[in-house]
Image (tube, rainbow, N blue to C red):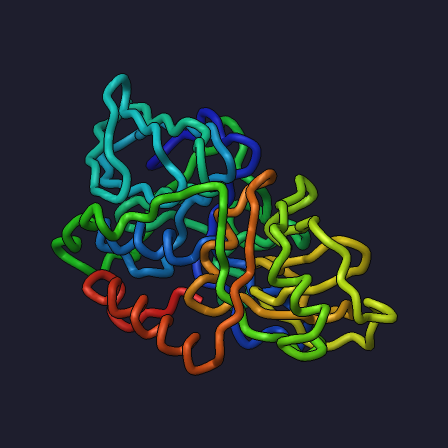
Length: 315
């Protein structure tokens, strides 16, 4: 074995690449809620960007190395220790047998990613090893990690040596007030309508009733709709639905493939990974972009991380 799980926290799962080409069969994508952070963790230890890694939700998390391994930690992690010594995130760390890694609950942000050089053994299902909890497939027996679980190292290494650590100006600064860039949705009655003004002028607050399927936000009623219920149509991670009253649903990795709520907007591809870091109590403002502006911001952001990720997509 490679590692022993001592404390998995509220929810820790093995996540890898999303499932593609299965939505017509009602199979969600799954994969990391913050895919960019997960891919960067893998890249830093020289793995394929889609190698199975551990997604840690809210923390705390603790594990023991049972052999010499190399790890990288990204995402919402501000207090990391190996034995009693603090280590930095977004860099590479070597662990010896019996070293204990402890990750405290993040003060800001929601999810932390732990990659082991070589990746971790996980069960594939329909082309992906990512855990999909509702169907109990992928990962480790389709479930969240438990205390005393033992994980083995795999062979997903592609880079020797691994890329350099991320410079500090490219490390994300998590916070509790988010501005997410969005595209206008098919059911929003005009960019300058009363509905649009209410949608974009409201400060939405993340509700505790949120999960990997989606983030529920409360804030304001939206005038201009007779009903939030419409015929079911395809939805995707990033789709923003209005279920009625004063709530929004922002869909995440495990979201369903169709839905009958009004589709007001969609989080742009360059910001979708940030949805995975929004935690209960955080506030969200939505900022509309044109398709041209959204494409330009995505291209610019991809260029920033190209030295590590190359042309790999994090959406």
